[in-house]
Every structure is written in C-alpha cells, then in structure tokens.
Image 1 (spheres, rainbow, N blue to C red):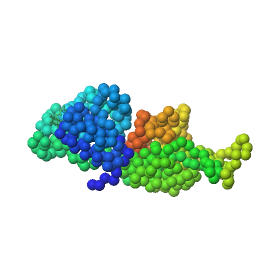
Image 2: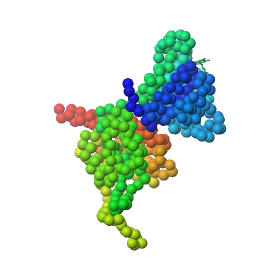
Image 3: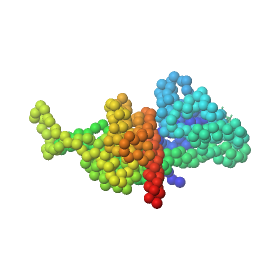
Image 4: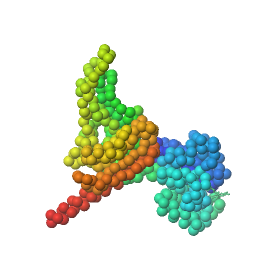
Length: 427
Ligand SMILES: Cc1cc2nc3c(=O)[nH]c(=O)nc-3n(C[C@H](O)[C@H](O)[C@H](O)COP(=O)(O)O)c2cc1C
C-alpha cells in the first residue's frame, strides 16, 4: 500500500532498546522521515551496544537522547519536554526487559520515564527469541500493557537471529510504518462532512489598510487535518494565513467576515459538523475610504459596525449541524465561554486563554472544552467538560476531534431515541 506523506507534521519519538532488531530501526527512521514525520530517537544503554547513537543521529538529523540523569543532555530537552513533544512514542524494538519494566511502571532510564510521563499513545514492537516471547512472564506483561491501552504491534513469526523459528521477530520497517500511520487515521468521522473555519479576517479601512487580529490559523488547520485523518470529508474556509492547507481538504480562501459568512453558508447545508476556529473580526468599517486616508489631522475617527455572527447563524439553522465554537479570552475564560455556548445555542465550545505562550500565533495551546450533554435544547442544560492540557496544537486538535466525534454520536443517538419514543406514543 502506498502511503501519501501520511505522517507529515507528526512528531514521533522512537525508542530503541537492546535487541538484535535494533539495526532495523535505522531503516525505520528513514522511512518515517520520508513520510514527513519529525523523528527524535531515545536509546537505552542496551540499544547502544547493538547500534550506535551516531547512526541514529545522522538518520534522524537530531541529537540522540540516551541518559536520564545527564546534565548535558537534560539541559537541551528534559525528559518531560520530550514526553510532551511527542505525538506518539514508538518503541521498536521493544526488548523483553523493557516490556517488563514498562509493565511494572519503572522509571529507571530515560525511555521508561518518558513512557510514564507522556500523554501521547505508546506503541511497542516486541522483538525477542521465541522462548522469551512465549514465556508466561512476558505474556503476562503484554496482557498488562494491553489493558493499559498500550498498543502492541507484532511480533511476526519466522526465522530468528538465534537460529530458532517461531514468534518473536520484529515487524519489518514498512509494516511498522503502516501501523504507525494507522494510529493517526482513526476512522472516527468516516462518512461525515465537516466545515471548518480558520485564521483571521481582514476588514478594510482604505485601499491599503485593514483591521485584523493575531490569529495564525494553526489551530483551525490542525483541526481540519485531524478531521481528515479521522476519515471526514472537510471544507476548510480560511482567512489570510501564512501556512499551507493540509492535504485532502477542500480549501476556500477568503478575506473578510462577509466573505467567510457567504462561503460557510454555501457549504453548510450538507455538513454534519461545523467547527468555527476562525477569529472573525467582530467589527468592520461602516464606510471603507475609496482612496488612501491622508495623515492630515491629529485624530481620526473610524465608525465601526458589527460583522455577521457566522457561528450563531449556523447554530440557528433549522437543520443545524453539530456546532462547535472557539472562545479566545483574556479574562473570565470559563464564564465567558459557557455564556457563549448558551447564548449562541452551540453544541460545544473550546475555550482558550490567550497570552503567555498560549493561544494566538504560538505552537502550543491549552483548551477547556464544554459541551451540552445528549440532546438537550433549552433551559438549564447539563454541561460536560474536559481539560486538554498545554500541548502542541496538532495533538490538541486530535484530542478535540475525538471529543467532538463522541459527543456528535451521543447527540445523534439521543435524537434517535426521542424520535422512537414519540413514534411509540403516537401508536
Ligand atoms: C547478542 C544479544 C542479543 C539480544 N537480543 C535480544 C532481543 O532480540 N530481544 C530481547 O528482548 N533481548 C535481547 N537480548 C537481551 C537484552 O539485550 C537485555 O535483556 C538487555 O538488558 C535489554 O536492555 P534494555 O531493555 O534496557 O534495552 C540480547 C542480548 C544479547 C547479548
């Protein structure tokens, strides 16, 4: 199967432990990078006996991390930062010893500590002698890890380096690559259509000047990308930004709030989910000057008028899609976000505090998500909520898509139950 840069922008932390199959990890780094992934390598001391960190450094283009308690390597990027950086931790090969340490929650080297510290999915590719693999100690450890949602890929059966034949061979790099790409393609939104807005809008003052805001579009673009990965067909309607649209989205560029509104309304009729991540200008100039305004007077008064409220308009549609808003606030975040959810009759709101390295024009964000539970429409709604801790926007977007998918299906099944109850009552 041909992969089309399926891993672009993914941050993969490759853990290598002490087994013969470590030589295959060198090839794996190349393959992962060919697919667009950024790869950082952490090696156990055992692994360094089988393959040199220099090889992995050359192939990954990054310094390789080997020590937990090493001042020099920790100063560059500590274990917690590496844990946060990763979109996925892939341990290949995973030795019997490492599997046992992971199963028991040990944190006695960099890789095991990282696996405890990360919120990213941990995936392991066991590789060992067949007796070691079938040993009940290893099998019990594997069961424990499976219960903790650690994904185990392989091992394959076949001839082993020790001359034996049986289960225990690490999967080939190509298979590992495909399994890794699969983790990012969840299929959660298969057959659904999404409309996503992103970026700022620009409201002209005169032919050369405009009013705008600091939105970079990164959050909305990451959400669109995560939705595509989850199998949705996505229209991304974007204000002016400096980033490339993700593959496989229908991309519509607009400038102003009015244009964004028109583009959304044209697209929304058959959408199942609307995610409004754009920072749409709230006001525009009542009259745009036809010629460049001259600097003649000390004061200049601009009369501003409200732009259309795209989010509220979509939520008001008689067949409104599942509607998700974003609230970027500098104060009273939670109160304002919940008010916006209620006043605009949204299904969900993702609130983010702007400032101090969060929010606009930065790589990381933290979100507080509120949603209306089930199919409630009016009154004192019961809200669900979840906090997504500070993380790269790509990771947050994937988590958000997961929450949106769950709530979307929950609402749909609640609606279907209501219809069924009503039909039964009529009979
Ligand atoms: C030549 C040789 C090959 C080995 N191959 C494997 C292997 O394929 N899988 C495995 O689990 N252990 C293997 N071991 C044992 C591990 O290297 C040993 O358990 C080590 O402590 C693993 O350390 P680590 O898990 O911290 O990397 C091998 C040992 C030697 C000497």
